[in-house]
Length: 257
Length: 284
Ligand code: SF4
Image (cartoon, rainbow over all chains, first blue to last red; front, side, top):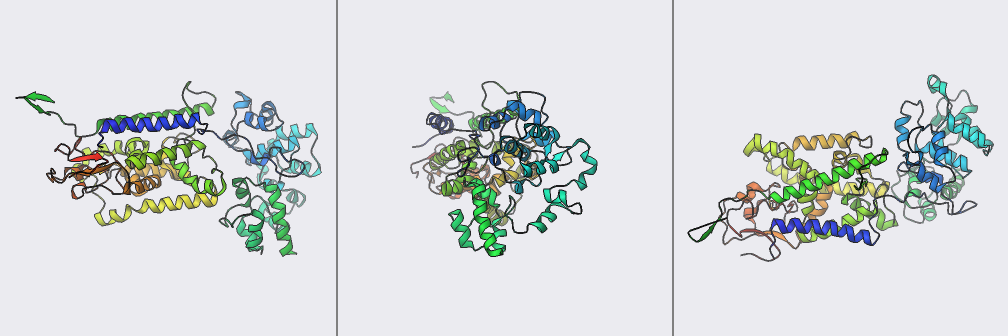
């Protein structure tokens, strides 16, 4: 069979749009993420959404759908005064807070939601996450922070006069109680050299002496690219980092004892 | 066509497949509008009745990029949506039938390159599309397979859409947003500048999706075929081919670079009727 350009043009358009319509009828045509964070799979909070999986593509409305916090509270916490708070996209925070001495972004929303709702959150992954003063005020007013979280917000809040003192701004609880500390990462590394955090890679585990076989046993798969963050791997494989981390940490502790 | 002394005589023969341009610019406008609307919707406004999907959802290559992660663990790489997998499926179906017709008829990045090339053709005339030395060109034509392997590898190992930072297609329809990486903008700029000298430089040398679809040229159902019995061997088809394929030396085009643009056929440049045709059958 020979076809000419007009037939080819018609076939291309029909097949393309026909295919899209057919897939749409079958429910396969989705152009949006579900905007549902992964859920804790184990422990006291099993079945509840994990704030660590809130993504930059979410709006305050999406966050409110998944967690017990309203868009109005989120808007107040992050100083969003214009427009519909439910439609506010998290990735805009970085633009709004572009002049902030320390970064406020999606990580800040994750932290705020975890603290506000009392859900678990790995503070080791939040060393460089900060909250605006208004967010901290809301958390303090709510009064459900334990001692560790209270200490964390005290050292991770951007206060109005902070800009001038940014270089000395304490970044971790350890740094806050150690005035002579030079820099966040350095301090943390010295205090806790073999602790799995959000920035720990599989290569780190291997270099600490954890056998590859043990890692593979715990993740239930072949070792991925060693340069990959364990946290990213957990997110990609829908594993709970909060569950995987202590299991891997136990292996680290074994070899570092 | 006019009838003169009882015979059908064609007094005007188009030198180009005009309907291809119509289809190309339709898809260009379509994707541009959706992309602009996506930005507007994110900022609280938006054009009514117009889809506002992210560009990642409208890219069939997203499906290819996430394929490994999807098959290995059942999840899609962040930012890739189910729609990308659907488009990948449609793209494969089209490629089995017609080869990389997506590249020649639909891809807006191909359209914009051809648009710039129009100026190159006008000012450089015969030198246009003949700047890269033949031997070097032949080697570089396979570079896009290296890009394809690299993209699939880094996407699989990082579970993130790393290619986004280099993707000129993403930059083309998002250059106004803060989401675009400077590298992608630079690659888009270089591609457009090179398009003045070479036809479709990105498609020829770097496009990983073109590389993927190009494989289907080896066994696609409808191909460009040349009837040796009626061919005048004037070489017009080879001169016209944007991908520099030597159509006049082959009877069936199986070259991985053919984009099914039909510009070499008897419907366009070939002066002899039914000599270079797009067919599933055989020719003599
Ligand atoms: S061989 Fe013909 S159809 Fe293929 S790219 Fe060249 S001109 Fe287009």
